Amino acid sequence: MQHRDVVFPLGRQALYERNRYSPAIRSNGFLFVSGQVGSLEDGSPEPELKAQVRLAFDNLNAILEAAGGSFDDVVDVTIFMVDPQDTFQAIWDTLPAYWGEAPHPTLTAVGVTWLYGFRFEIKVIARVPGGDH
Image (cartoon, rainbow, N blue to C red; front, side):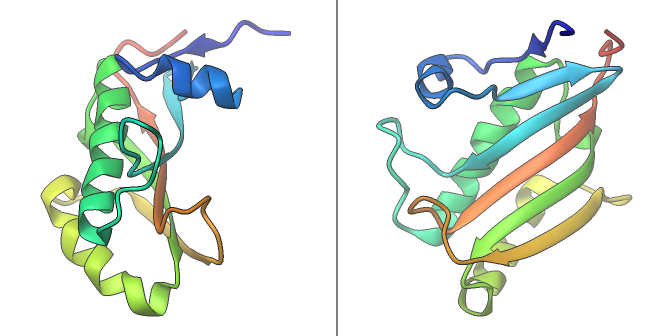
């Protein structure tokens, strides 16, 4: 089995060890980031939707920074939304603060029925500087 080059954000390693997955894996110049949610420090969901989306992006950005990158390096985004008919606009209104200028990454948005108590999750693939291992 090939060695996995795992990227951990500061202060959240216990969360990933408890749930038995890696926050991100660097491979061949790309960073594959696990889905990020708007979790409070105790792991529970931020109750307010827009704040939950902001916190998910903050958690995502912490991983990208730990890998030496930023959202500008993201090439592909998948977002998951519980009840998209009611949540889409609030989520979409929050994204521009994090999304940056065009050209934007590719995007797939998926409506789901359950996200472990969360209403929004974001998963990305990024091309990171110096990530060619």
